[in-house]
Every structure is written in C-alpha cells, then in structure tokens.
Image 1 (cartoon, helix red, strand yellow):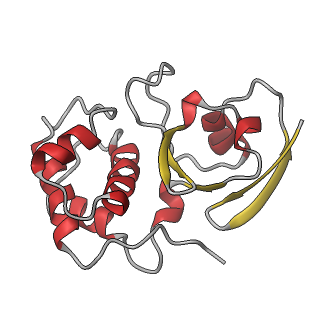
Image 2 (cartoon, rainbow, N blue to C red):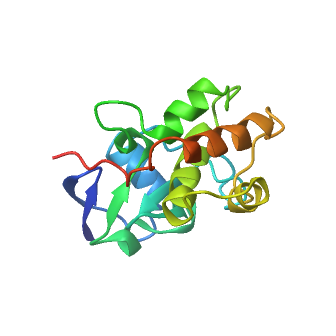
Image 3 (tube, rainbow, N blue to C red):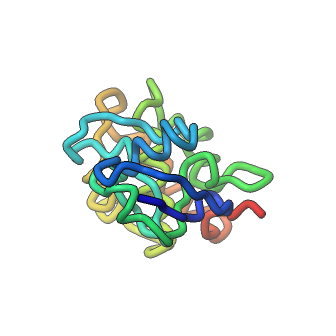
Length: 160
C-alpha cells in the first residue's frame, strides 16, 4: 500500500506492507532513529511521537493508519534552538541512559501544549504511560515543571 504523510514538516511517500508498524516505518524506512523501540507492547512509551500534536505510541499504530497525518518525531521537535522541554531536560538532568528520553520529551511537549502549567501530580499522571528504568522520575518531573515555567511552550517546530 502507498502512504503519504508529513513527517517533521516534509511530505513523505512510500510503499509499505499493510502490517508495518509506524515505529518501524519511521526508523527503517525514513531513517529517523530517535524514535526508540522499547517493548513492542505499548507499555514503555519509548516510541512516542506527536500525531497532529497529540502524543501517540508509534508501536500501536500501523503506518497505513497514519496515512494523511502530520507527525513530529524527536528529530523535528526543535527549531534553530532546543525546544523548551529539551532544554529543561538538559538543564535539570532529566535523563540518565537516555533511552526513554525521546518518548518522555514528546509526551511532555504534548502535555504542556494541552496544559501549560501542570502541577507535579498532573505531570506524573501525564507521563504515566512512559517508563524510565534509570532516573526514578524525580528529575524528569522537575524538567517538565521547569519547561512549564519557561516562556510559553511552542507547538512543535515544522521544518519547511
């Protein structure tokens, strides 16, 4: 089947097998390896991307289901400077091994776009679908709250 979708601001078209997961399309077909594969069961959130601005675990969606959508991956989140969520993760040590970080950042960006000034409890609830085995979440939550305190969190950058 042929799919046509906009990824990080660029129209991408490709022939795909109907059973190809979106995460594999992004990584294997488009070479966007920032979207990680963690569990293949939708439990960990390492594969989180934004589809139409909403966070979606790309291992739960077929590439053909994404046909016609606008997708932002971690590679497309920043503009000329780091996105505020990325900068807050950098400043507040919101990562350790870094494997979950792309998914956490994407989920946090979606959360802050919907709820610009969440409480700590709301951040924890908003990220509950993303797992980290290294940090204990303290600095991740601290990073999201710091991003909320920065200038308004912009919508993800779209490359032209």
